[in-house]
Image (cartoon, rainbow over all chains, first blue to last red; front, side, top):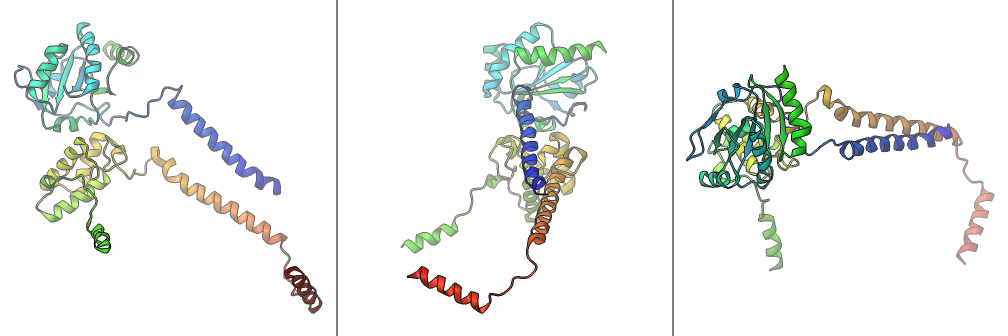
Length: 182
Length: 153
């Protein structure tokens, strides 16, 4: 009896330590990213929306545009520093022939146009979400965010934060291959 | 003067994230909006509700909640609208679901285990204790007093 009572607390502490060790491993060497949240929009059709182009541009963006083939939808703003960081990677993707649509979040038209003039324009179409309402329909909470939308207009993946060559190689390319093969 | 300054502190109210232009004229609707806002997490700050947060997204969501209430929607419908877009994580009080079972059950389980351990311990102690404490005999009392006297000297 005496032995069991002293053994039990030790066993509990040990079990909890093991649990913590597992969680720590997951977010460290395990590579699990706990800073991004799972999207509630995965495998759902894109929300219904119809956005006017940025003032001074011709093509706006509406949900119907996203049903003509596999595409990326990138939410960006000229005032968002990580958007600048990821921009070259979007340019590279566009050069390879990936269709990229843009949602310009709460931006001034002049600033958005200057951003594109200086850094290049990878977007096939851009909708100007001046009120941020359409972005809420997409469940967006950080900028930039990039969605993978399949040919039927369903959201298949969401990436929060700037994309990088690593994200493209390990996530987007394999997913796009998989979806387009079907 | 000091008292006056001290009393003035009681006039201070906590700074609020909500802006005057967001507040609805209809007091009942505004009250409902405040209650809903306190239940919804600001996803930018994550440990604040949209009612507490200064983030632009929180403001957008506050305005959205008020617009939908004004359009005549029920509280549940407004909350569902936000959850449909942002997932259960947006709720500051997580719903009871298969995926959140550990969260809800583990505190109760720990409490039950603790109570069982404590009871086991009490029972053991009760077993080892002598059934009745005998009062000191008059001889023992004398001895004790003698010892105490010796000690205080």
